Length: 452
Image (cartoon, rainbow, N blue to C red; front, side, top):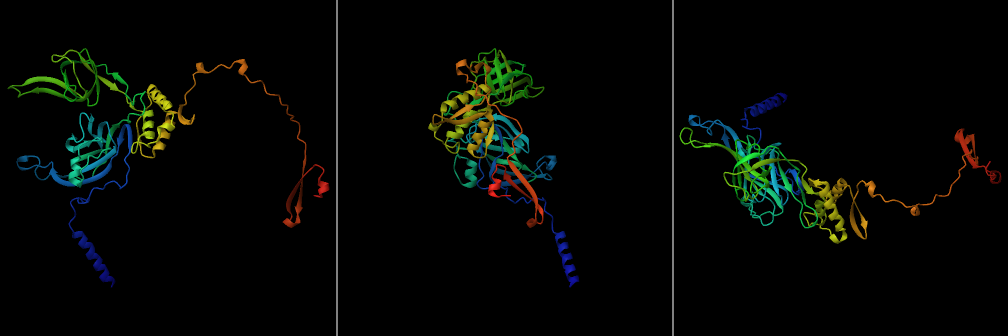
């Protein structure tokens, strides 16, 4: 019996050993896991990196890359099996106002500063070999997400939802998605505070390296262009701010892209040396001198101190309707004090860059605590009151008529205290002769009460 069992076990091990091994330790047929049902989207304010909710994945396929075909041509056999898949990412409650970066595994695969004007909802963003995606900013009245409509059979523009649809995403030799996050900018809703700016701009400092313009082309965002001599494409990145001086359109502008062209044509035949960097602007340019242009363009160095006016965030979280806020009644609050708080935040540059994932009132409490602001009752309404150091020059002077007279003098005797209590200690037979104490007041009543 033991021999038969041993033989059967050996045959089982041998059968498993003879089975063909899979080409990949990861089952390529397993679907990509999505986020749990009921996962909440965050409210984002300012410039934040957001890890998306993974809503849907599908249409996976693979192909060989890096191999050599006939005659050594790339794309043939003996390459690496590479996977591609479509995916739908929900980023945050929209609308978002700008996308700065897309990171994969902590490494940037897209760097720019696209917004709903330069790249409207439904437009495609290229991430090079990592694939491409369509951006949907979450604004009302946007186009239908064609990818979702085709994959899930649901035709909707998905308003109030900033989302991205990969068409497709390159996964690499493994059919698993790496961690992807989006660096977004979202501004607070307008309409609650009127006396202060809703956004606090970053501090800009001129770089000190102005470049001489050789050409300038007026135009709308994405078509207006500046040209400088030499290769300076790496100096002017998408989203950078520049200053024009000495032109007919002096002022500050934002860069959309920059590219360098060494020359055109065929060397030795019709080659023409260009050696220019073209800077495309993300803002309107009008009134600039056309070629040959005069004036200079200088890049600004941007500090990382910009963000949403914190008072405007508080106003949205309190008064905006769901899903942007609690929708509280404004007549219960002293709005003048909130207006003043917005002006104070602008003056003190109290910019907010935060992600709200808990309750909205908890977020309001955390913001007010960070700002040093108290909320209390005043004439039947809730009033915001900042706590700041008092200016010594503003401390009121107390005239003699307002001073309080000295209080009556009290004399206290520190002599030895009079003993008014007696304590007796004796061995108690009923307690196995353990020490027992008895305390009585020494006021002459002990004899009368026959306590002893």
